[in-house]
Image 1 (tube, rainbow, N blue to C red):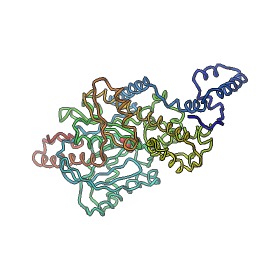
Image 2: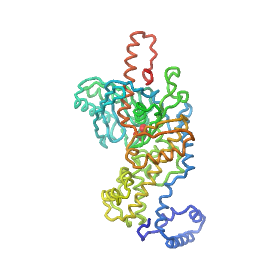
Image 3: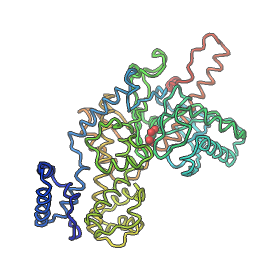
Image 4: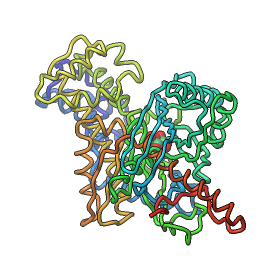
Length: 523
Ligand code: BGC
């Protein structure tokens, strides 16, 4: 992998050299001596065969995380999980481990027509879902959330959402029919029941004023009321991880973990009720389990991942909308991966290790190397770097060699593998904690779906990290955000209707807690 031959060996690139040399350099008190040492190093480098390669590898070395470090990450993750689960430590915990009030998975008997909303990335979806047991029919429409709304006020956001629902109702001739609605809202929320979700903090490029600390169901109902042209009843709010798990569990009874690897990342899992100290539920009522939305994206926000973070991770964080927050997410998910790759490519260009030292204006633009490029570039196998060259063209890079293609592919592969391995450490931690003999992990999200090797990389690393004897599967979950929301709304709706009947029969005996859901109840 030789680069272009006129490499500029300056202090910055020497800094990427082996730690031993750095130690020697640092011990030199005298500036002249240090400079002298640098000159000797430069001269020595040039007689090393293939030294350009060595320099490329040095730039990339921080992305290679040792096996023992992944084990340490798993241990740290477990500490964070326990801190979040316990009542007395939750306040200071970064990983919040939110109780979801969903206490079991669907049993396949759910029926009826439901509306579902899905908000979590740049698109907003409205869905009409008809459940007939295992048979699920969906009709959906995607609406764009413009950047000015993502960064505007909460009122603008919810008015926009209400307008999209209204348009959907009209185009689907639903008139003023009052349909039960499930809302997949994929941001960290402290739930006080199924239909009360307080946003703790925005993530993934959203920053609408006046929503943090508020109940999003109330904000939605208020916006619908302001329009006055439809009747919608939001019965349940779920996270997309819960949707993925629900949707998969509808057909696979071993499914006990939901994982999202898309614009953001997060996981949920089934926890024993005695460990869920924060939920206000009666243990004697119903199943002794509850889904926990870990919000693991915030892992590392206390600095515990600093030992594996690189200068590029720090740069991405510093220039994000939420510096210091969602550290683990920023090392893994699709919103940030392309930018990490871009920063590395820029460094290589600046040291004349790539594209003959000549980048392009677009390559130097923040956010302009999309994560989908990583998947495309890594999909090139023995095809003369077809996709890679196409990406270079899109970035207006005029001159590139086969060697450049190989280097860029190598950069993409190191950064995406690190992401897959970090996510595996998280999943390994959950599987070991649950300690069930066989678990299916429902996975959704564009990164997992479109990256050519993410699944295989995760299978391999998770296998290394789980306790011997534990079996697991990673299963692509289909449209969990829509189907999952409808499934949860379906049971909430049934419970509400039952409660009405029950109330008529014996008001004094009303024990049902509608804020909580036991999806096994009918079986
Ligand atoms: C959010 C989570 C969500 C994840 C995946 C994160 O940024 O905080 O709630 O599940 O993205 O969409």
